[in-house]
Image (cartoon, rainbow over the protein chains, first blue to last red):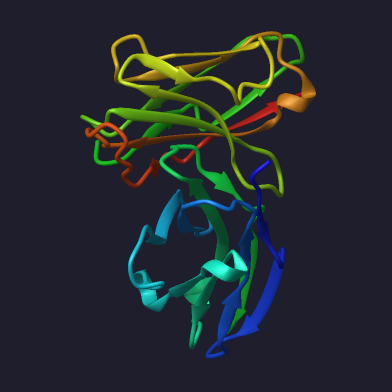
Length: 113
Length: 117
């Protein structure tokens, strides 16, 4: 069965630290890849997405993610985090031209001021 | 409204009660999805509508779960004879894909937190 793994359930960083959240998926075919973010008390919202083309994708609020097909990975990065980045981050995948989002378990990120 | 809305935001039900959860998608959005999110987990797909047609209900965990979207806009997820394991956040999302096979971003509502006691 297709699955998405997020390596860390909780991450605590200080402001200005660099961030990398891991995401791996298990599917051998074409995939569409997403990172969603849920700020405290708010809806899930799309951070960035990859369909095709340049494997380095830039999203909102200075986030980026790199698709490495050979590693089945789509890690999320930000060079310098802010307190306002405190949130839960979800990696999700749609295999081929399907429509079902398959989700990771999420990573809770806490930024210490 | 501008976004996806869901009601109620919170629901407490006694075991065995029936509940109905409502989703108002973004106006004009063709596709509508329901997800279940248990505590500490990512969302899991329940069912998918394209307009009023329920094209996929493979994620519904039992025959106690039923979803409908009779006029292709508002959708209701009904859970009969609720059990404790049904306690979760139920998320609704909509997207505007109009072209067959195309995919567009899913916009999420705030969810309904269901607690079964």
